[in-house]
Length: 597
Image 1 (cartoon, rainbow, N blue to C red):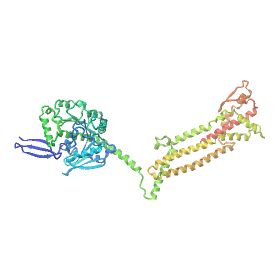
Image 2 (cartoon, rainbow, N blue to C red; image 1 turned 90 degrees about the vertical axis):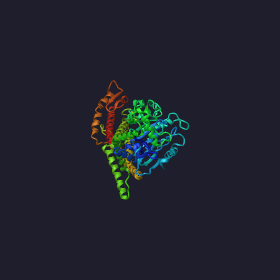
Image 3 (cartoon, rainbow, N blue to C red; image 1 turned 120 degrees about the vertical axis):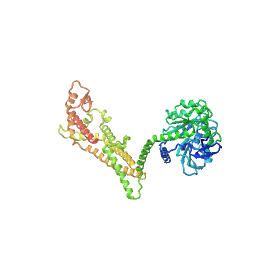
Image 4 (cartoon, rainbow, N blue to C red; image 1 turned 60 degrees about the vertical axis):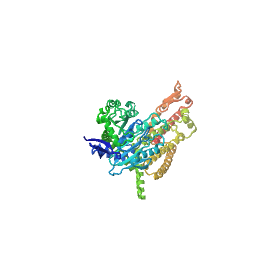
């Protein structure tokens, strides 16, 4: 009776059909490896798309691609699972074998001669199938040192050969809690941080390798994967060393106490110096004939089943993630195009340079018009100092309040005494009801001198602020042309300096003119003076004729003023002093208002 068994070839990852006849003659017919046998025309386009994106290095831009990440506790058999899937020998042995993230990039090639090389630290090291394990160990020593430490720097294994698919898998160091001789004390923190970095992205497919000899609930790799994949929807568990602990394995994989959403696959890896053919024959024989393991459903045992599941899971993950990946790529392309458009154009002639300069000046002019005139600060919505109309209004209001504030000396002096003393000194020929012009101008000059520095200081502050705004606008408009930016800013500062000087001179002239004019064209002057002089008679009466002799009098615009010191003067002198006080006050208030505007 003829029978057929699937085994791995010893020299390639291809499967072979071994036909056994009664005469014990074997005919080996090579077929593709398990992972390739599941690789059909429906899945191939999706995997090719992801591989092209990976070749374009989109992951460097922060875009995650669906990737199979192999994790597990130390010595759980991770690397053995990978080499069984890909048919490539990896470092094996006791203790920690994988000390850096090993990125396996398999690419199908029509050439019968395989191309295999390693990439790390910007180096390319060619190798061949017979020496892959040695080359990986040597590269690992360069990256992580010759001891037993680990490193987060990835080592990429490229393999172009017939019979493998375009797929990428990442083998991570085994998780260990207790450091051994030669390992750093924080070895667990280093490895756990590395594992979390790779399995946290939602696009990662977690291939959690568990040893049948341990309790799944105590596995550190299970605890970590559940932190990032609570429902297990992207976690597939591979149970190794089934032949070493067959008791209760059926209950472990059917009870699922650790919530593995994608299910379990039980496998038997190579032991010792077994060839791939021998390992696959022994695996098939084990799960078919063992009294306990044969009870496990054949749909969840064997490397071929694992390969098929991985291909389907990865295709599903790619189909789910691809629209979001496309959206992220388009978004980054839009940002890149915007940044590209901001780059300076190549100027080959003085004419082109002049055009660029005129564009900068035009852009700055439009921005200043929006900021200073239209009150549109949308370009600088988060920078309040560039909200020019609001800031200028604040400065104007502060100047107006400061201008009209009474100096401390004026507050402390006795009411009307300045006016009375000057009237007494300015004796001249004149009509009794007319105020001496010289006295009026003397008092007016004193008040103007007291505030003449304030308008000048205000106009300087205004131009300082406008210079700051101009510098910011020019800096933004010429940001792509640093070679001329400083020159444009310097020209702007020179222009502001000249304009500031003219403005200061003009304001100084206006202030000085106020000393020479005992008249005003402001129509509100008479209204203000009439209101203030309406209480003149009551004021004189309270000072000279009120028998109660009050100490103060409430005067509109001045508040309560002391009057007891005025009772020694004649009514005629008090009337002139009062009238002069009201006229000076009305004129100054109109002048202040005009200056503020």
